[in-house]
Length: 225
Image 1 (cartoon, rainbow, N blue to C red):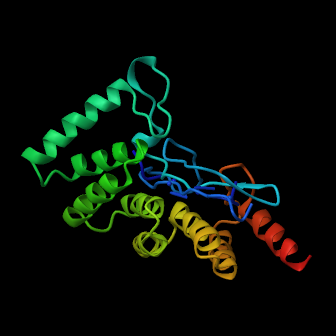
Image 2 (cartoon, helix red, strand yellow):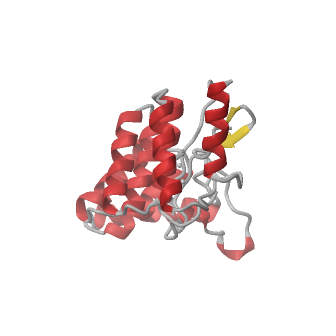
């Protein structure tokens, strides 16, 4: 699934989830575990900031991180395996026949997410949320897709909605910081967002394995130099 997913500090480190000019991507939130950030199919491009690697995430419990049946290798972002391609076609038919099938809309959104069809993913996720509001994972993955279409304000709004639903949703908080730092150029806002994450979980870790607390310190130290 897309949502549980941002060389940038930690996000698109799907973002979503970057030197300051590099792109950072977000991670989707279709994953069910929110305590640690996981890199899945939804993990997008990385950016750089004084050697720190960041990307945006997909949430850890969804199709984005699932292995393909039959021992086939996991598909890469933007490319679906033959099995996933068949699933996508089946799901497109399913939502036409049963437009109130929440699970089908969500799964379809994840497959669009994994194949980097952002506009279609946004539509599918919004259909899912219209039927079943309050899914923090889907909201986080929706935010990653909004960022991919160049709409950081909508991305932030989606992450905020996810946090409102689940205040402990770490992926949403991390991805929000990525968008603030790299897209909105709001370093104070990003640091504040990540500090809230660290206050909630001092062991919070970025996709590259670095502690979020260390990322905050490195950015602060760079600012002073």
